[in-house]
Length: 164
Image (cartoon, rainbow, N blue to C red; front, side, top):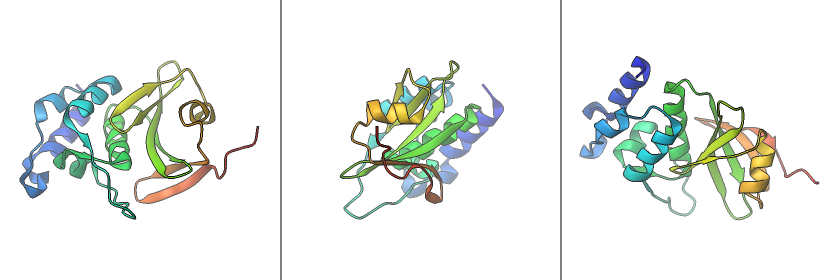
């Protein structure tokens, strides 16, 4: 295991970050060595926690682990942090849908095809462009943006869905 990943996960899961007295079970998370293992760990250990109407609070990876869950952007931020520690480049992608928004985390597999996390779940695709993935997986999408932590929706990929 890479020392950087091990150290990061130890810091994230250490009691120093355990706000509200909730500790995360570290042995399983320390075994994460791939996106597939991360998805399995998240599915088994974290739950989706919807925010109330009008709320949009972005948790840090530490908060998501301590709270044992979060919503879509909280999961995407955690995924991006772990993928970075695994030396996998990734990008947060906000997907605008008719009635709501949804945050995902995209990365390229070793074949160059895109894969993405939606909440705790990993989806592999046969596509090379974000537009193709959006059209198949989110057919009613209206807009999409690259996003950075602390800079919500900072770079619009498609300010509106391109016409066919």
